[in-house]
Image 1 (cartoon, rainbow, N blue to C red):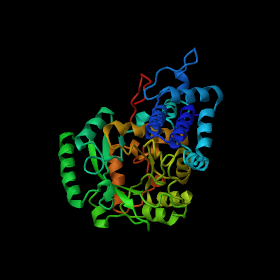
Image 2 (spheres, rainbow, N blue to C red; image 1 turned 60 degrees about the vertical axis):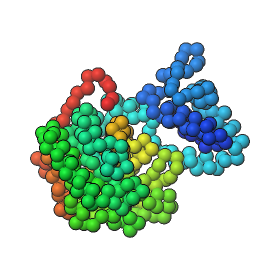
Image 3 (cartoon, helix red, strand yellow; image 1 turned 90 degrees about the horizontal axis):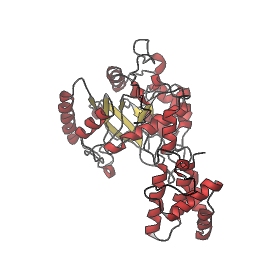
Image 4 (spheres, rainbow, N blue to C red; image 1 turned 135 degrees about the vertical axis):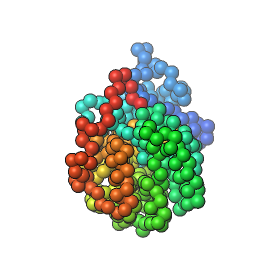
Length: 391
C-alpha cells in the first residue's frame, strides 16, 4: 500500500469539506507535503509513537497521519465527511485518484533493481517543457543550464501554440524569434547540448491540430495534446486517432488530459489509439507532472504491447520541475517499458532522424528499425550512480 498516497488523499478529502478557507488551504498544503516526501511516512514515526517534524504538517494533520499508521484509516476524516453532507462529492473525487504515484513510490521504482525496464541513467533528455515564451517561468538559457546540470544531452522547448491563448500560446512571429535565440544557444553549446525547436499543439474536437501543415514543418518536434472535452463521457477514439495520423506530429502528449482528483480526461478505446500511433510512428507520452501522470503505468503497458514508441517527459514550467521526468520514468519502469522503445534514450542523431522522418510523413515504426538505427541496450549511454541517489 502507498501509505503516503492514502494519507495525502485523506487530507485532500478533509480540505474539501472545510468551511474555513484557511483550514482548507492548510490541509491542501499538508497533503502536498506528504505526497512529495521521498521516503515512506513510516520512516517519520518515532519510537514514542509521535511523528518527526515535517514542514507544513500541523497537529490536526498529524492526528490523521497517526490514525492511518495505527489502523489503516482515519475516523477523523470519515466523521468530518459524514458531518459535511458531501459524501457523494468526496467519493467522486476519490475515483479520480487511481494509478497515481506518490514521490516515495517514484523513488522506490527508480531504485528497484528487480524492475527490468528503462533506467534513469539511460535518459538523455526531456521532450516537453515550457518557457517564458508561453506559460513557463524558465528562460531558454535556464533550460540549457538545468539540462546540463542533470546530465542531459538535449531538451525540447514545447511552448503552447497560438491556438491556446489561455496558456499564452506563441504566435508564429514570436516562434521565429524564439528559434533565433535557440540557434544562438545551440551555437554556444555545440557538441555539449542541443535545444530542440518544438511546440505543444492543441488537439481540436475533430482531432486536427491548431496549426497549419506549413507551420508544423517549421518545427523540429510537435507534441499534440488535448486541452478540451476532458470531462466528457463521450467516446473520443476518432479524435485521438486523427491526431496521431496528422503529418508532422511526433508525440501524443498527456493523452487523457486527466487531473488528480478533479477530472477523468478523455474517454477512448486506447488500444485502437495505440495501434494507430504505432502505424504512424508517433510516440505515446507519459507526462510526469505529479498532477497528471498521464498515461499511467497501466495504460503504458498496453501501449508497449501495441509496439508504440514511448516519450517520458516532465512537462516542466520551471527548472525545479525538471525532476518530474522521474515520475514518468517510474511509471515506465512499472509498465516494463524497455529502453529501446523510449525516444528519450536515443542519441541526438538518432532522435533527430526520427523527428525528421515524421515531419516528412514517413511512418517509421519500432519494428522497422534496422540493427544500426535501433538503440540496443549496449549502445545506450550508461552513467553509473554509485551514490544510490535519485536525481
